[in-house]
Length: 447
Image (tube, rainbow, N blue to C red; front, side):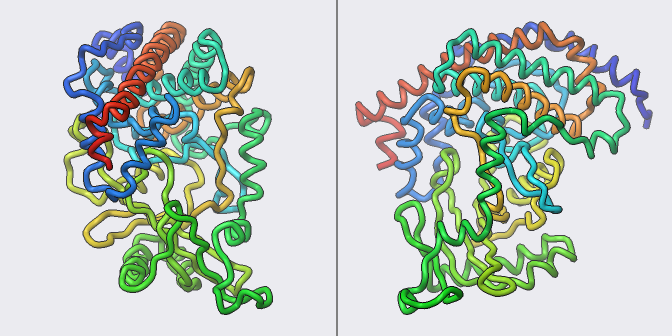
């Protein structure tokens, strides 16, 4: 097998321009849709908890960005209907402005990076960029920015991506893997998220999510605690169902590295709850497990989150190998992200696949209102850098850099795509609201 030189790989990337010209990325034609959005959404909720499907659509109908967050199956179909470069990376899959955030690395440092991988799969690198471009326009509009500012933000995002990819292309492989993005704290929306993350300690989560057990309400610090119910968002689970969830932790522990199995073995489970999270994930089974390690001052909260197949799976040949969906997410996250959660693993409950990770441990994300004015462009540039790092870690930076060239035309094309897709998102959102008003389609079935 021939080992391609860096120069050959760069030239291979350039040659991909014949497969798809860089200016062609501005194209979006709704006439290419083979399946109506409401049908795709209806299919995507099959197998979810029926009582929560209505809540998912309520969150999607709240705003165009709420719709955008829950409509990954629609955008996956739209992207698949367009030509692509064939330059493959590990996609985040749901690259939008609120799926980056702060979290604690293994050594306790706070990191800001891509942090949602439910849709991760190998696919054309530009699919992540197109979803991010559209999200910058949809969220930018929602935070009060004019279209000109939103387009500038997309251009800066993509230009930043191109610059970073050109920097990665000649670097030693392990330096790319270890690379850290500097100046993060100077970006206003990120700084706000990092401040929230500092406060999001396990003890803070203990106060937020739990309460003393009824028999110990007047007791002293250190008395037993349990989850505080807030239905339907947080509901305690007891009996055989709780036993089944806790039993799955034995399988989860086997997916951890040996030294991490040792750490985890020092915790004992105390309580279990069902938690509603996100927008796209609403209706999937999501459990929280409250554990205690070295006494009451050492709580640990695990999230046991059901993982369905990626919305991109029907369109990518690499997706058809049978595999555990939690394992898919774990492997994708480790490829893309720096400083991955030390307790990240997966398990199976009643034939369904789950990802297991720490809940809320120094985690925080930006808010839409943080993206007003200059914050949108500053944040967009960081989004581009972080996507470039994830793609360079999981793909071929030489080929991608060869394809991109200087990147100005590519950035302009993505800005146009972002505007067009944001306009279509507005129309799709209106169609969903109309379906509710008329009591037709997927919304009617969600009752």
